[in-house]
Amino acid sequence: MYQQLSFWVHGNADHQDGIIESISVLLAFFEGATANGPGGILPALLPGLTAMANFHPLVVHFPIALLFTFLAVEVLALILKKPAWREAATVILVAGALGAVIAVIAGFSAANSIEHGGNVHEIMENHEHIGVIVMALAVVLALWRLFIGKPLTGGANTLFLIISVVMCLLLSFGADLGGLMVYQYGVAVKAVTVTDTSHSHGEH
Image 1 (cartoon, rainbow, N blue to C red):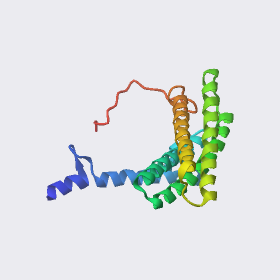
Image 2: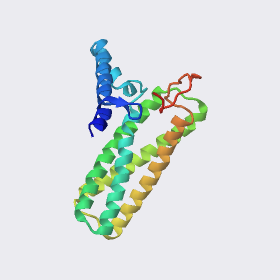
Image 3: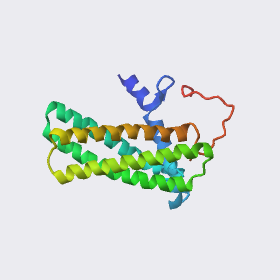
Image 4: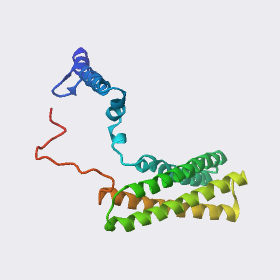
């Protein structure tokens, strides 16, 4: 038992680095982060954030997750007859709608600041149009629920669900176009020189 604990704390060839080594690396990291003064702390702690060309990628994932979660909770609440879950779904929907507004604003700002070629422009335009439609639907659905003040029933609820499903389908298409621009065309991604030196995460 003592040997196993010692291996875990100090590390060995089979267990890679132990806790002590990890703490040493972490302390060295923070020491390096503060070495360049206050202005160098944020780039050292959050290099991915400071390297971003715009804030659209930072905020866009929140409404995506929230709106899909809203639909899932709403459907489950109807199937399982859980009124409290529908109230929770309303809160999630409102948060998703607000997030969609912020994401669209950030998206338009990004589109105006990012250089892109003609092969990407049409994709970006479609991405923008879908984003605006999703935002509008989310806001309408959220206001509808808030103003009614109680769970919808009958035909009104059926229409509400249909619009919600359409919104999430469009959200999927828009997200796919966003991923296409980034991963296929490298929009807002800085090129990195690839070296010939091979590397394996299993090596020490």
